[in-house]
Length: 155
Image 1 (cartoon, one colour):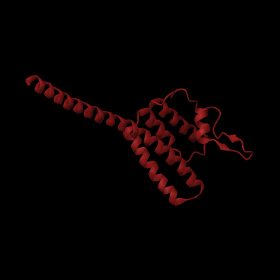
Image 2 (cartoon, helix red, strand yellow):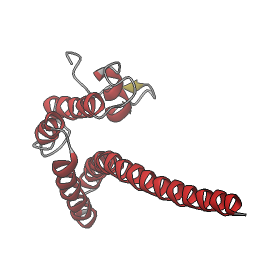
Image 3 (cartoon, rainbow, N blue to C red):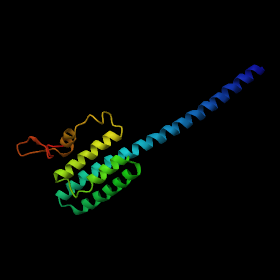
Image 4 (cartoon, rainbow, N blue to C red):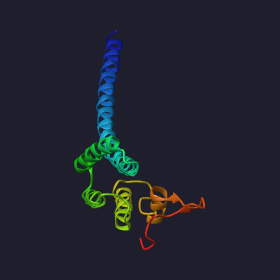
């Protein structure tokens, strides 16, 4: 009888310890997940804000422009809190332009994306060309229906 009680007690204590260890590890994993998601969400929010702001300015929609300026400021603040120094510097350079209408502004924008990929742990972060980023983010169709790159060739 004493052996049965001892075995039951060991099983109970083992179960409690296992549950506690699992709880600790899941909390730790959730914390790490939150820390990695926050910067990524901030960068996506920044790109969305820049793109939306550009569209609102072209449409002369002052109300939406103000909304997207607020989103841009909030995104930059989150990047300052969570970002790596090289990426923060590239964001500062890219957002110093009033619009993406100049080749220098476009180049700074693409360099910001490349810096984030390089320092943010994106798969193949060093293997994406600036031209590919420019085509995806800054490309547009010309009057003939063909995609035209609005980006300097020397990048």
